[in-house]
Amino acid sequence: MSQDKKVALVTGGNRGIGYELVKQLALNGFQVILTSRNPEMGYKAAQKLKESDLSVSFLLMDVDNQESIRQAASTVKERYGRLDVLINNAGVYLDENEKLLTMDPFILEKTMATNFFGVYHVIYSFIPLMQKQGYGRIINVSSGYGEMREMTDQGVGAYKLSKLALNGLTQLIAAELNGNIKINAVCPGWVSTDMGGSSAPRTPDQAAKSILWLATIGRDGPNGGFFRDGKLISW
Ligand SMILES: NC(=O)c1ccc[n+]([C@@H]2O[C@H](COP(=O)([O-])OP(=O)(O)OC[C@H]3O[C@@H](n4cnc5c(N)ncnc54)[C@H](OP(=O)(O)O)[C@@H]3O)[C@@H](O)[C@H]2O)c1
Image (cartoon, rainbow, N blue to C red; front, side, top):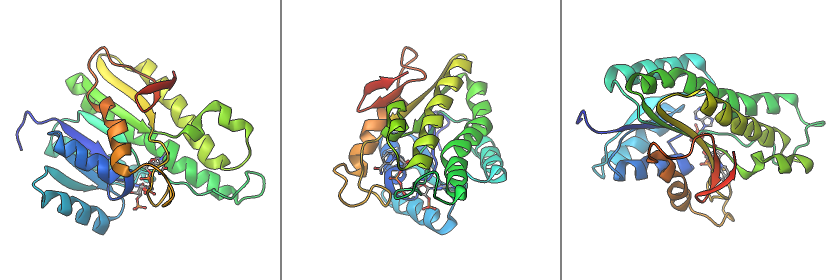
């Protein structure tokens, strides 16, 4: 690997939007670390991209498991010594037909564990690599369901709360960052993946394109914003 190549890491890169993000980052010249909690699926996904001559490697990481995150961060430090772009894409959507007051409370706990605490712990473990080089771009894949105005409609409460908290986390961390490190959240739209279902109008390819501009913003680029299709939804 060339020492000059920028290194990007994507969580939940084995399928859906994450897989497409890995592919497009590699097509744009990044050395990409495809992470997945499932070793077989992750390895196979990375192999498929490598067969197209893309610079992709696989690394095991379950964002629900802090030890797994710590190990992944230590491997990235050892193998690459840098991290330029971190995309927190892994997510779950477990309460489509549920209400907060009648569902099993574990659904809320599990959703927050992946969509909120998972992102927090990944940033916590990987940010020292960015701080070391004084450069980094972090993208949190959020959802329009995380907008405050969504909280007035019942349903999908666990998922909505997890993305609302994720948007807050994005702003709070942005306020703590120094130097040329930036963090933003983005809604990919309604996308035809296992999560979005087959009637969704947007392809994973289109979703990834609508996200990746945030990976290469310059020093004057936004920090702490929440975007959809390049437009600011809120700070
Ligand atoms: N699709 C949409 O319409 C839509 C809309 C708005 C926002 N989003 C957001 O976009 C992101 C990607 O969604 P998607 O549609 O691509 O979903 P998807 O097809 O269901 O894929 C989800 C990915 O997250 C991974 N994942 C879940 N829990 C994990 C964990 N604990 N550790 C590591 N990986 C984990 C999954 O791994 P496994 O294969 O092991 O399960 C899978 O790779 C999510 O954050 C989602 O909330 C999607």
